[in-house]
Amino acid sequence: MTDFVTRNTKRPKERGPWWRSIAFVLPTLVISLSALSALVACNAGSIGIADRDARMARDAKADDSGSSDARFHDSMVKSDASPYDSSGLDATQQDAAPPDASSQDCRTLGCQANAYCDTATLTCKCLTGFEASGQSCVPVDPGDPAARTQSDMCTKWQNYHHTTASSIWTEGPNQCDLGTLSTESIADAIAYVNGYRYLTGLQPLSDDSNLNEDAQYCAIIQYRQGSLNHHPPTSAPCYTSQGASASSSSDLALGTSTPAAAVDMFMDDNGVSSLGHRRWIIDPSYGPAGVGFAGNATCLYVFSWQNSGNVEFEAWPNQGFTPISVMPTTWSFSSNHYGISSSTQVAVKRLSDNNNLDVNALVLPSGFADPAIGFTPNGWTPQAGETYEVTISALNNNQTVVYQVKPVSCP
Image 1 (cartoon, rainbow, N blue to C red):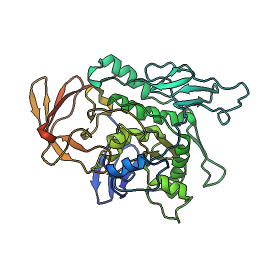
Image 2 (spheres, helix red, strand yellow):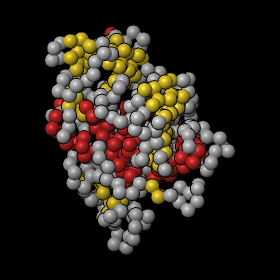
Image 3 (cartoon, rainbow, N blue to C red):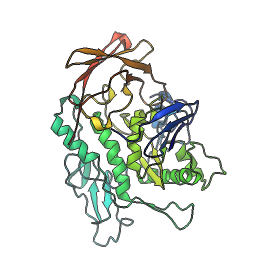
């Protein structure tokens, strides 16, 4: 079957997986072949760092923007709840702010920030990545990725990276009705995003009810037109200005059965030269998110950067122990602290035999979250149980960053 990955062009911004495939890159369209399913992903547009920072100072939700990968719109909407699994530290869900006894269903149950409504019990529960503290759900500190034990990493990763939804999307009575996306499926997608952010040492994010609605309008357009377009024309099936705006502000995927599965594809970003989907998801300031899904189309709203956290760099695969099951085709190093230029170099050494391994390195286009460099193994494949020492040199002021990646098989 055929995969399509398209990337729109916006105004400037800086800042064993089954979906991998052979890719053929065209100027605005990447076509790849997959043996198991047809998947399509596209990034929202990029915006320059200065533009983003200016928008952050504004007290209003941003409009369309665009370029080749996804960045976030400024949205000042408060972080609302969506379905999730408890704290991200263990598999035990934590109740927060119990509903009023008169609540009949999730439509009348108002959960506080960083929580979602469990449709089975009609209670508010903290999203994965957050834990109950009194009547609130507070972020769990991800800690230092390099300091984690293998057991601790695997336990937490498995808590993030699993799905709980028994129902995903219920189609509406007519073609352009948004239908109903279950709170559990939204929570699963947020859990996947937070799982990757946990691995890279970033603060978790929550979803936002307003952004979820925007993303759902986006998803119904993408699904009904059967192809991805960040700037759908007014003649597109089920066109709305709200959906069109969200389309230009989201990572888009077509061909997955759940929105959570699209997150895995965004993070692998195989065949996407900018690695823009990935770079938006693991940008420190990303959040809150919006999740939309219809049929087989996913919109992950990413033009939102109200999160906190200041990390030295974002590496994928992450430093320290990392699940080999989600090892990407191309590795990446992103940072807003180090200047990455055409002079920046990458070296990878396998410590078991001190063998210097060949990589194809390329400074990635600006406009997609933090400045970044990508590097692809050339003639070797990462193996579980090995330790790979990565050296990024010739950064600004001739600085060098060294970190270790330790792929492991989690049970």
